[in-house]
Length: 68
Image (tube, rainbow, N blue to C red; front, side):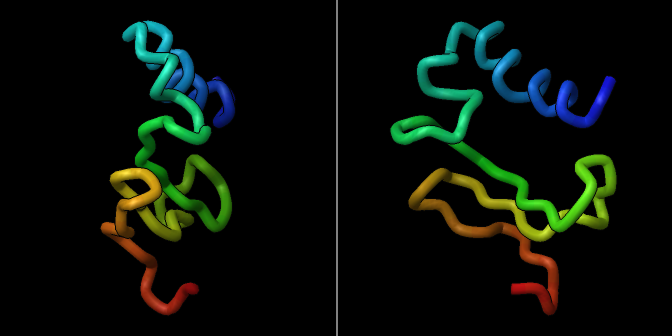
């Protein structure tokens, strides 16, 4: 499975399976979202720049030190 296929499996495909694709599984206006912001390769945990929970009103719950 490619990194993009893994991402789709965890997002859009999961939302469709749960019959929640009208509010989850994409970054769109009105959708609920938690995001992982990467500085590089999706498969490398050390490339995570930040984790944001709670959509537009959410806050970063993790930010890589020294990176802005």
